[in-house]
Image 1 (cartoon, rainbow, N blue to C red):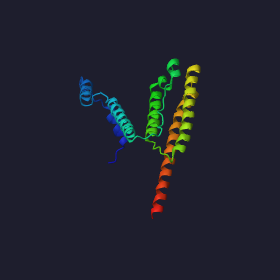
Image 2 (image 1 turned 90 degrees about the vertical axis):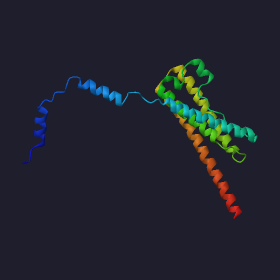
Image 3 (image 1 turned 120 degrees about the vertical axis):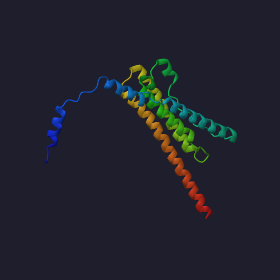
Image 4 (image 1 turned 60 degrees about the horizontal axis):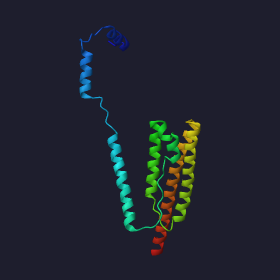
Amino acid sequence: MAQDLRELFKEEKAKSHPMKDGHEERFSELLDKELPLKRKSTFYFIKIAASVLVLFSLGIYTSIYYKGDTLPQPAIVETETENTKDQGYSLGNLSPELKKIENYYVANINLELSRLEVSNENKAMVDDYMRRLSELNEEYKRLNIELNEIGPNDQTINALIKNLQLRLQLLQKLKEKLNQLKSSENEQVTSNSV
């Protein structure tokens, strides 16, 4: 009684099963009714993220203002310079994907800058990293000028993205160093108190 399944499928395929008239239209109407093609907007998520970032920045500014700290705070990274505004092209102007990449890195760089805890003990180290960061910022401006003079090409675009990556990595290394310094100070205080 064993039957070959291939043969059964071939026989079934050979039989014709006509669909009722209008079946496909009714099916697509039901499908549209149950699963509309409306895409949920990510704009709502972006509004929330921007609001959180603004509130976070205001909180930091307020806490520093009322504390009366006179330590210099790191500057926020600017992606557009006066030169690029006049000349036309910047990384974000080339395509929406590049704009997303640029915004991602700039937002993370600014977030890392806002989270830095600068004190008198670590001021020299922070100043050294800020000097390196300003060098990378100047290189970014030079690359933007090159982008406008030569025109968009893969090498310049990759160099701009790599520059943003290097700045973010530099800030992450600084954060690690500050955490190591803070933990070593905590260990020293603990060992001295015991």
